[in-house]
Length: 201
Image 1 (cartoon, rainbow, N blue to C red):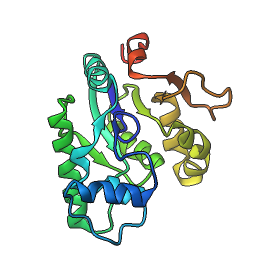
Image 2 (image 1 turned 45 degrees about the horizontal axis):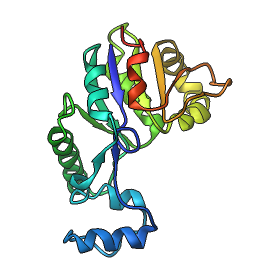
Image 3 (image 1 turned 90 degrees about the vertical axis):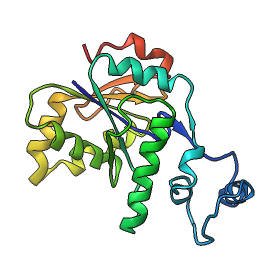
């Protein structure tokens, strides 16, 4: 079984409390050479010079290592940039961060355009086998809300296959909604609770 793990908000945390300007000033005071045209948090927090400063969430390293004992793991993250050279730097910085923090299988990184795009990439990777697969993500509500709209008409067959094989672990919540659009949804309040879940057995 393959387990895809989100990064931002699921195993990693970047920045400080406050608005964009406060965070820009914070990183510049640390000597990080940031361009002045950054206009949103994702662009700031995914900058190749900022990624190494991210912290691992409590229990995440141990939790992912636990998951890795039950199946293969990889990291599916929405870290994108229009410039291909900058995108390559983001990719390399992400791998390096995972390696430095001692996360399992740190080179297995897939950059995605959106949360739903993670499911497409995950399906394409795993479509040639019949094993179930898992996504652990703090943006799980976006998957539930927009799943049917994305996987309709031309993508209906893919959507049905994903529903049959996917277990979506909702990171950060203790209770999941009753309506899940047919998705198998399991709450994961924190990484301390990963030992209570037997989805990869």
